[in-house]
Length: 433
Ligand code: DLL
Image 1 (cartoon, rainbow, N blue to C red):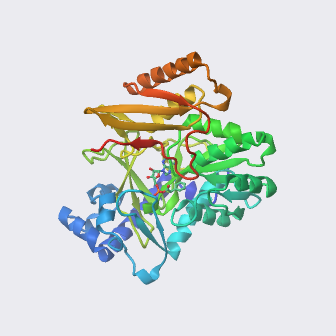
Image 2 (cartoon, helix red, strand yellow):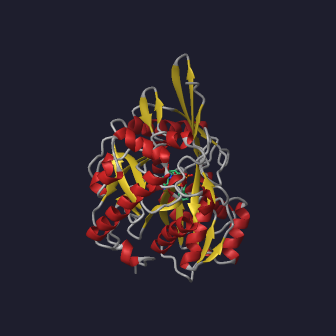
Image 3 (cartoon, protein in one colour):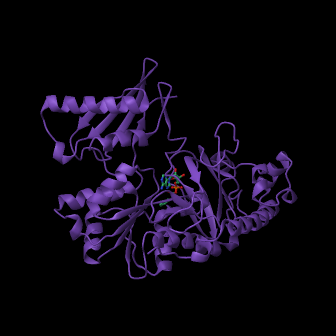
């Protein structure tokens, strides 16, 4: 049986959702115009005033915000309430330039935690569940967001944060955790460690996992589901829009429902900025219509995605987004060809490997070198050179037909690529361009 946290809104009719979005958008544009001079200037430059925005059909008239704006306005330039009304900040784990600092009022936190509670209930969670939150706590939004959602559902919450994998497994067993929340790469690592400890899926009390914060493939989902004996649900979000819970998967596992009472989603062509029709692939853009402290308007996420409004068997009516294929800024251009790490992962998983790999790119004599190191699984580990060469050849062939270019593939021993307790580092780009 499908469970909802806020059924009246999660299953509202399309007309009701549209009316709510229209009303909230109009209010939010006025709030931002009155309180954020940085965005007001952008609106003025585009010749738009709050009176021009009468509903969602006028959304396209508003200017975009991007990561560059966040950097320009750092730290307080996009704040829309007095600092004394804010009770928390969270920040991104980004490694380049200034970090993104997002501000929250108490109400903002409350609504964010509602979104995470919806995700936990969509994964079958109730107040009978024990929910282990193994996302990082602190500045990263994963731990605090799912922690708050878990409290709202009434689960017994285990705030382990990430790291110390053996202790994670001890708590899962001793406290009978039924739901695990962490990045998919950490879930795979926990699964791998359990296997090494000789634990079989039926000795593990977990029934569901809520995994996100990075792109992961369907193949990786199947792998984690098998090793942990669970159903693995995807969850999406970003710091600029609160954190996890912008969208989440339901029992149908056919895309993630976007919480449309809080976020309006659009897909645009990243080059022309033109809004694309439903079903097209493009860059995901969000407008936050309830966030008070840090209200992002038409924020360009860089995530490449597709939206669908087709009816979902779970009863929820909110628009769904397909698993993001990766970020447009994660996209590698190697010898002029666009390559997403997720494509390489699909080839690996199809040939029986786990998602333990690293892509190393360099430029030698003005030509890109493209190396992929892939870990053998313990089952396939061998020192028979002929067999290794055969396997490498099959991988090169798989990648060539997926990408149109051939990498140099090296098979390496199990456990020789560093594991991640948070977001995985898949790419090392040594090119100085
Ligand atoms: O990763 C928030 C989060 C925490 C989401 C826990 C889900 C679970 P940031 O660190 O700001 O926030 O990174 C946001 O991560 O723009 C996507 O590129 C990527 N991302 C997040 N969730 C997914 C997902 C958190 N389910 C950036 N699939 C986003 C693919 C994801 N990519």
